[in-house]
Length: 244
Ligand SMILES: O=C(O)C[C@H]1NC(=O)NC1=O
Image: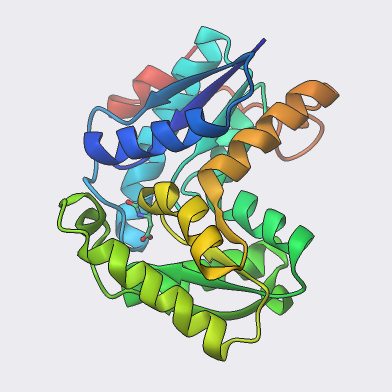
């Protein structure tokens, strides 16, 4: 059996539920999804500062997941906050939804577009493309110019803007696939794929299948080199919970 801890790095319970539903929709029969979010932190992650705050919450959840014996961890925020630090802390695999969606897109198209939320998060997506080596695979990036939590306000406006940006990408980018750039868009991928006739990829579901694959292959985070467990040292104050 496979138990996957899906971490929404922001503290929005509604978005955690959206993410959990998307994960469960594709989980194999033997896979259990444990959806969590930090007790404290940012209600949405929309920039470098938010990501730094969220990374601590991600690490706290990864430590709890490791102690609970989960088979793998997913960082369900498109900035993949704390990914490498989480890999040091984890015994099992850790996959971010941005890297998962990008990898999947390269398997079905020579180039992909990204649709995310606020324009300022476009730079974060560009940083990830560089970090993961996917710059030449990404044809263009689009922002719906709405905040992350607009996806959970029930108005449907953000979802409509995502659809519009996908249509723009189809018309202008010359790309063969679209990557949804927010965990809160996870529930939109299947319907948009069918309606628009192009693979629209959600990183939450992609990451679930990647963790299941790693689990089935007996592959886990390498502890040979820089992803070995952190050096043991007395961590003080708010970080004391990481000791031991
Ligand atoms: O950067 C974004 O728009 C998306 C990112 N922020 C967030 O709170 N969850 C996310 O997936």
